[in-house]
Length: 262
Image (tube, rainbow, N blue to C red; front, side, top):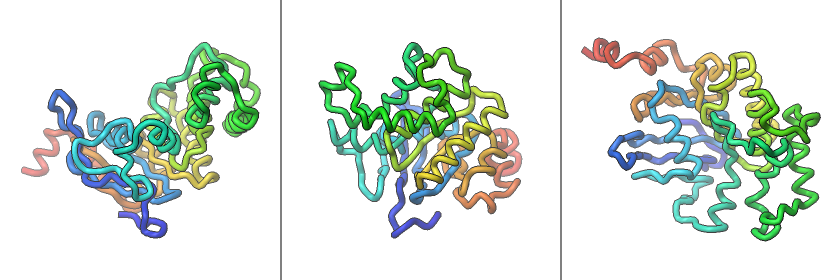
């Protein structure tokens, strides 16, 4: 496990297990600690439990057993406004961009401020000046300042994902969680988008956890690699210490793995 600042991780999965209503076990007592400011990439085959772990870390799903702690506190019992404020500290970026396609880049970015808005002003689309300034600055930092008034459905895939990143930054979170953020992009654009996530995370001192399929890209950006296979933790080590043999084991087919174990 990695060391943490003052001994308290930014986010921690403590023996987390998750079983879907149909009985499918997605995670089996997974424990991962991520320090403030650390960049961690989660690797594994499709169905390994990466997205389920991400949803648990984000507070979108409650573990079947175990706990998820943020700065040492269990947020599982929070409700209402307190829960919304806690979730606002976690910026989420998904494989699907989840933008309002007919809305402008600026309007999509401003969605990240809703957790800080009283209900009535948000219903009548009142935008505070400070919120607008925060959104414009986030869009500018993603290189999209000349696209502010353009509708999201008129953008390229890479631009749309950058709008989604801007929306997450507008929340002013202390942690970014990116679940396969570049799976729908070509390799060149994908690398640029991931580089942007990591660059901004490092500048802001944010913790970042990214689910990635591209091992080379993960090794390029992450301080630490976490490997999941069939919902179980295979390794959790600094990137420089993860070997080719580790990765072969992580991605081996079940038949090949059975042959090795036999």
